[in-house]
Image (cartoon, helix red, strand yellow):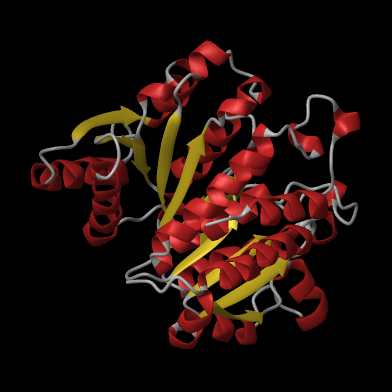
Length: 370
Ligand code: IPM
Ligand code: MG
């Protein structure tokens, strides 16, 4: 039984190590608010978090000459979970491949074995009108994209060569059965805990990797008889997401299709500033980050929305630490603050009433009660 008083519990609480990599742009601002939320849960529940900060992305390029310094990787590897802000910005956009923040992102996924990327797209009731889609189309939309994250065309061999028509560029897409199986199983398992519907997305009418994908899905599907499975071609899926978003529960797909569809799904909700994501490997370790990017255009102004990063902490509590009650406390606090009408600029109807990043963080912390 959990003791009522946080004081006793504090002595017994296991220290959880969290690697914090704030990154670029609005990353440090939104991560700052998420840390306040972490501290508040220490107070409320007697948890103990040890935070270790690391440089990552553009700032790491500037200070260490590489987007993913070994030191940062070490910090992540000895942590139980990673909290990531965002990386990238125009300053590094024209850099060579090795000196791009995106290369660091792909590197960290691969090095930490994070093969599964989970991106929920939920329409928050109080923000229904923020979407570009009609509210009646969106009604009830609550889906998760499960994206394979360490394989496919992102990680296949890439090269240039001279061809008959001049220079040629080649990107190869490779998937093996084991890689497909582990991500598809995750899709099935997540679906089992939700509405028990799985859409497996591929391009099996054209691509060999997709044909292997579909065969593999069909082979393991009988192990999950309670889940209703549909195969959807990726182009059709892009269309159905706009036509009938609420009919999707879990979508599982390969790396690049998942990259594209998860952006589409996030935009359906009209509130990309609210969406959190998890990247998982084997075991409980996970990397948590907002779906939105580094938003260099508004960085440093104190107007960014910290909610996606704060909700990433809730997701970390659920998926890595098993702190379900604390996760609920965070989610409830966010809802309460939104229901009371508080908005940052990105989700405000009346922009003149918008509040800033720290004000939003403070309101959420103040609303956190057990
Ligand atoms: C994402 C991003 C990355 C990706 C980029 C920045 C490399 O778009 O996390 O979805 O394509 O995976
Ligand atoms: Mg993307």
